[in-house]
Length: 308
Figure 1 (tube, rainbow, N blue to C red):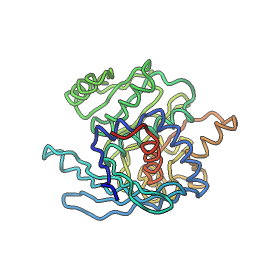
Figure 2 (cartoon, helix red, strand yellow; figure 1 turned 135 degrees about the vertical axis):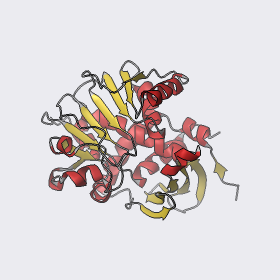
Figure 3 (cartoon, rainbow, N blue to C red; figure 1 turned 90 degrees about the vertical axis):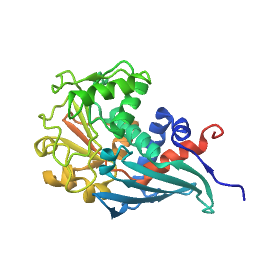
């Protein structure tokens, strides 16, 4: 048996093209809804200083994966990344391990691609101005995805301080992505808002608008909510994984939404493919993550030109 190949962050990123990822996620979202991808709600064990270690397995006929990651917010003060982890990719029939990907890179790129899938199937028009709230790793992945997929759109960033916004913009400029600091005031022209923070309290509370898609990706525990309850309740709500959202989507749980009215992004993909007309209304997409999305990313990596 040959040694298992292990791909670091740069190598993993090269395998996960954002455009290909979006298509793979569109397929996986429908497979997940149909029960053809098995991905239980993640389990976690606590670490010191409010950290957590998360286990996320998933399987389909062709592939099986397991992602093990740790999330430690206190690492920021230590000058360390807040997320560590790895994704093991196995043959779906034999279970034999094939290769290992960098966990934070898989998480970051598939989460950003899932948001971009949301833009594809839920946006009321052509996105022209994005606001990313947050200046951490997940915000960076989203900015890179927007720069790659929507280069003509204006991209604003809103951080805790103007210094954080400026540093974020300077970092993204190195990869050719132009970011404009919001400096505390989100322009009215923004038609897509993406909240990607670790905040426990709402960072976005503007009134829901039919011409503005709101996406929440940062909060994934019942006690955390990035989007204000009033905004949530005034929106048509879509989620990535219904079972996981009912346990983990603090934004929705704290707003006391009617779960019977919540739909999955897989159903939105199906509507778009069938060209079904969806009534105009403010839309909120809330994602909490699923092993199914990691599985989709691993399919992309597996099918990519020879891994290097």
